[in-house]
Image (cartoon, rainbow, N blue to C red; front, side, top):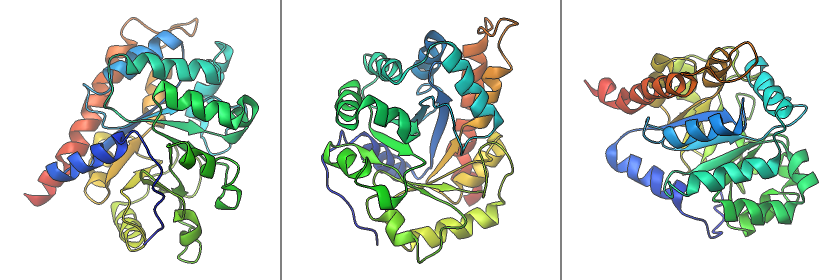
Length: 287
């Protein structure tokens, strides 16, 4: 099993997965890009997601060269950047979310450069104070753990690592050594929002990963519908949906790139459908 780092944390992620295990269901984890298309719309969606069934939320941090992201999330980042989005602003969004919700875990997902420019120690202190529970930083391999992963753990913040279809048993121990909170399995070899893996392939991959770690395994990349989310939830501890939600936001902007009147409701309705698929998946499988 993987080494577990016992850094102090808020406990929100652990508490959420423990509660879900008691209920016998998987987690629904939506992703949205901070400040896409506006700070106000992001905050409205963010505040509505828990009631719509989100168990954990991933919030994207903008970066000019998002190499792991497909067209939908790249476009979201460009819209946010055009609106003046910054890392500090993203942390303020989390801080405002925490005024009403102290239970739902928030994970920031992005790349190292904006954090490096901000200053690692300052970023970790500000992120913790804002109410961030963990980080997914896709361009820092285990060999660079001293850059951010170990300081994050020491600061009491989870560092969620990615595993992919090409992460073999020889590589897994390095990937898992300092991973905490949960392990994120990227179900396809490629960028976000493109192809989708089969349920059998995902099931086999999750089973293999669980031979190496006690951490919950979340699966993302390529999940676009409630049916696909439900299929993943039958074999994994969580289903992550990003590009489909981000594309829905893009589809509900006016000619000036501003939110349509029903944007927030449309996104939250879709989130409810995805959550219903995830949360009912294991019950359906048992019937």
